[in-house]
Length: 433
Length: 160
Image 1 (tube, chains in turn green, cyan):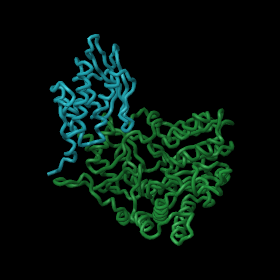
Image 2: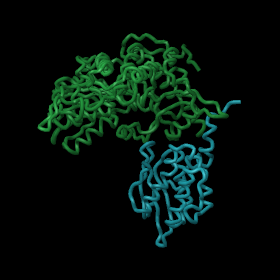
Image 3: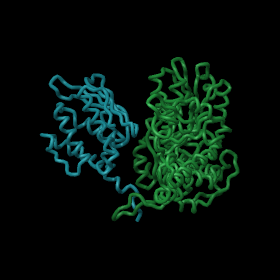
Image 4: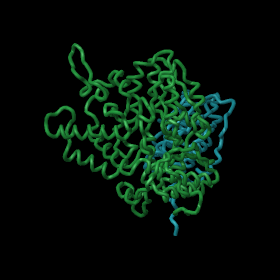
């Protein structure tokens, strides 16, 4: 099962993004994730299969410190936040607000006030579209997205488009999945009000040159929003180095719980935006003669926030920071290289997305076998893959595909699991021969 | 002894299904179709178009489909075209109802929807294995939903 170290296809790859990487103890890390011990398809008379979880781009599994932090919160430290004079409320508020500091550190944001908590990355997009977008986009204006985008960075703009009547321009990519920066620059003009692009394609793994994209837009005075959903779990992200104006990610792909996401916004942009939803916690003063709103980030956080989920996200951030995101990226890159080389060597297998420096996502198709069938058969062997259009239909159309299979690696995956993927693909081919 | 890794799926992916999945029958666009509809299963990316020619006597004289999906949906569409030809609309609908029951219920009553072509139902029984795999029921029934939409005169069917 283990690869031959002398095989040049299996050589260790240089650390992701050129940062020095220190390998972590993978066995110890796997011990932290209880679910990785379970068997799937187990029932009387049939041995289960060890779970080979390769659907991390959809959602990542949770380590014990996250589970324990959430449990501890509910058992010992739970109350509502921002409104109680009592002991527990203060304690919970402190713990929840400390997570804002952790996110600030994670993204290297200038201030904790840049960090708005949302339900997920999708809500962060909807927040910006319905506040900043509704205020500043109108007929004759344009925004620029890329063909790589997840529906979360397409549909909120389209919803607003029907009201505000601006145009949406699309940066094309080449057959490897690399964005065409010349075409991008040519799309920008006096009408362009926003560029909103992914910092990691959930289908192809492409990591666009975000800093370069921002530089080109800023040279024309255009703000840039980046979708870090597939970037934050896999590499160090520095919103100041990127010079991003908005940056979003979701907690559940970062080994945290569902129900919490993050919008980073430049201070003056957040200050220029009206509230997103109305309710408790976001107001300064309420009267039937008129209501005033709090300063960012609280202006955008109406109602009781996802307190327990926030606590869980804080523990998840601590967890990945302890391992080191550069180390995680380097480890995943080794898995990516291994799986890509081995899969590409199988006759009839075609990799979709071969951009240099991509993140640890391998999309592929097998000639003559539908991805849905591949996914179901692989699952029988314990290998969890995502199949379908991956919430990125325009990208599927760009590549002339109805669907792909996608294996996406996380910090706990092993070379043996990459090998299990290769085995599964070979077995599926055999089955349909 | 090596355990067949796909043991549980042999019931679903029977030889007949693999054959129709690989070599679908009536996979064409008839130029003289009187009815057609498009079916879409956004979850897995299956898209098919079902065409039929309804004769003056109300008999389905020809039925065909285009588009490819997974082995289950392609095989189901292929088998459907074979068993539907020569039936009238109410016979076709009764067959769909019975087939749908077969794909979703363990104790489906083949007489629940009035008289039905039992030989046709027997041929379709190779797809009954999908009831063990709820996510695949949509694959097996997409072509039929699309056929029903074509008969109704609708333009688009979706399993969503």
